[in-house]
Length: 426
Image (tube, rainbow, N blue to C red; front, side, top):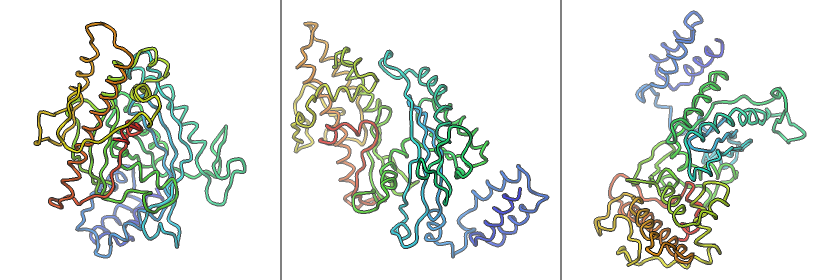
């Protein structure tokens, strides 16, 4: 209980609370009052301290110093879909006389990062039960490996790894302690999420450290900032400055998000039916011959579709952007084209998927390879132009300066579909 008493004392003496609040902390920190119930209650009390209880001298600069001046080590778990992922990430403390102390964008080190993917090839898509079984089989093994890669405390160096403790038996005596456990809380497949969440809760209780539940989509939006921290540098084009806009495109989501700060995000547009990644996977199953799909060895059918319709990569793109919003005449009508000039900030891909399937139902029975490639290219072009149209609408709205949202200078494209090179061309 000594550590709890010390924590209460530090909060009381920090100068961030009023005298009335400090008296409550002093009473709670007495030895005769310390127990698990009071500990949990006090943590909830501290979390609910209103802004009015904070002294004037607790300036934003002081908050930034407290939040960013220390190092943090986390064990992270991700089980939202068919990938079982575990990582050990460390955020380093700000060094004196470094750019980090002026603008706190700190360095980070990824000490461990491994994943195991469920075998869903025979189902031609993700089977929730198979994915859940894969998490049950692989998560404990990955966690066991991750804990052996915890970094060493300052002053202790492992000769074989240059600072990371890799042991085949018990924990290294000089390994750092974890500060908290991170885990994906959603969105995702419910059964898969439960496996990761339950395991993370058990670890947090076992280590007696906090649990941080992370929103999957918010993590996508902030990934570029993590990449910048991992690169250990800060400068032009290395990290998106707030505010910025993110187009999150994956197999389960299509969202346009305005990010004002780390925890202040606003959804500008989202899909009303299926995600673009889902559309690409379904289109691939209709367009690409099954023999080629099965050769891929996984269910990343959208990637196989891109490879099928653009075998030579960027040299096959030959894309010219339309100069007007009026859709050009093609075999595949753009989604929501009936709205005309009154286009809404929504995405829709279900109708486009139906149109692709209808074009492939030839009366002759067989579709030539050239026709399949042509339809695949049209499908990608129309889908990506639909994405781009809503991004342009959002940028035009923000550029007027009317409304509560400030203009932005950075657009982040994140998610699995962001790796599509033709999307980047469009």
